Length: 414
Image 1 (cartoon, rainbow, N blue to C red):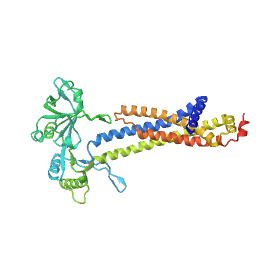
Image 2 (image 1 turned 90 degrees about the horizontal axis):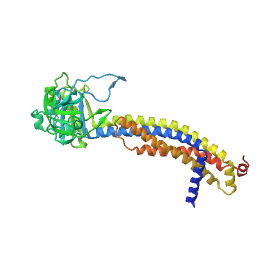
Image 3 (image 1 turned 45 degrees about the horizontal axis):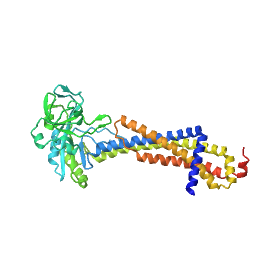
Image 4 (image 1 turned 180 degrees about the vertical axis):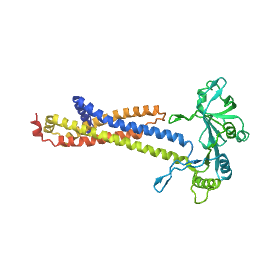
């Protein structure tokens, strides 16, 4: 019985919506605009978070880097002061690696030799936008990189300064297209390098390709790319995650000894955990989510008023119908439920339209910015809940008003 009554209410609600199609359409559009803004921004935020998580999670939660700077500014006396730290020189990097003997750790030294290299293969050459990194045999593991073909550097390659290289995946789509890259000879600044490995594709981060780079042994890179004040990076991986905090403390004291800092002096270097870096970046995306809710709430508030107005007008238009139904024995709850169903249908239609357009807009922007798109289930649930609340709030007063109409006065209404 209840199911039949519910179906009948749905049928009547659709009939009522068809009779006032223009007002209903405008209300649905207003609701959809708010939901679209909400879903689009939340979809974009989800894509950004997924991209950042994919980029940094591969480094592992048990890795930390020692760099020239931290990723935060220091404040003293309530005022921000610029801190200029000395670069990490090669002797300092080597000294740290030799002195740092914490258990279950492995240290890697690397540096960016150039970001504008031109690489040649036979008669073909790349645009001068290739990044060349000087690395040791631990760099790939510590950076969360893997080879798709071939192999990583060995201690023999690095110790004996072999002219070998590991290349990014984009080379297989460019100058090494349609050939097996392993064993091929590439020319960098006139030096010949034999390809021993190809990295797995990493994609782009903020428009910068992670696959247009070449890794070469660090001493070979130092001999080819000489420049003053080269800044080196140290990366440390800890075999057991529970030892990470102690390993960082030990690394901090070791680096202070390398730099001969007195106990009263602050660190003039930065130690950055891989999980801290992503957490800082992801915390920024929370503001985007708040902005999405603010925009959505403002727009949805307007749509709630519009929906309430259309339902009040519907009650007024159908006053005589309500009187007839009450005269035939319809209960107050039946009348109220009928108008509430109509409000709920309009709200959910607007929510569904907004979700579809919001996902499409978010997908388009994410694709244009090279973000990894994921289905924003959280945004979809939030949109459905929001549109339901809008319908609940907007339909409450019209439903109560229709239920409380006096049947005699309603029958006399013209």
